[in-house]
Amino acid sequence: MKKSIVLSAGSVVAASACMGLFGTGVATADDYAGQTYSDASSAASDSGLSVTVAARVGDKLSQDDCLVTRSQTAPFASADDGSHRSDEVQFYLNCNGGYASATKPGASVASPEGREAKAAADEAAAEEQQSLEEVSTPDE
Image (cartoon, rainbow, N blue to C red; front, side):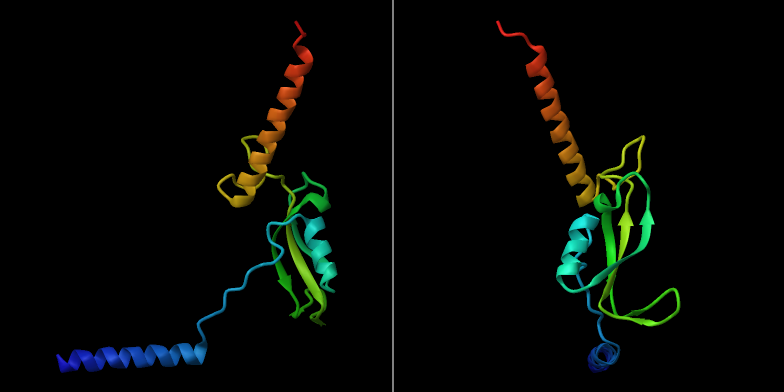
């Protein structure tokens, strides 16, 4: 019994020492992910950062309407020449469309962005259908 308590206490001390030495990792939120490029670039500019598009997937949307999937804020090294970059943010864009369907690429409707885009498209389609029914129905 004493042997297992000593081993358990030793394990706790060793784990604490490792966490203190190597850290536990810090999760940071991405301030720009999920926004359109136009909204995210405006917010970044307001914060004094210059914006660079690091990667782009798809060609269905104009750049302003593309979704930022993730961002990377300086400091980092330039991919072109290895120079140190500061006061800059890199955006990774998804320009496939609001949500995926059987015939077009986009965000999965299982993701928050995809669900939101699908709901907005369904609402717009319902409004259009309603206006068409009002126009085509004669008054009695």
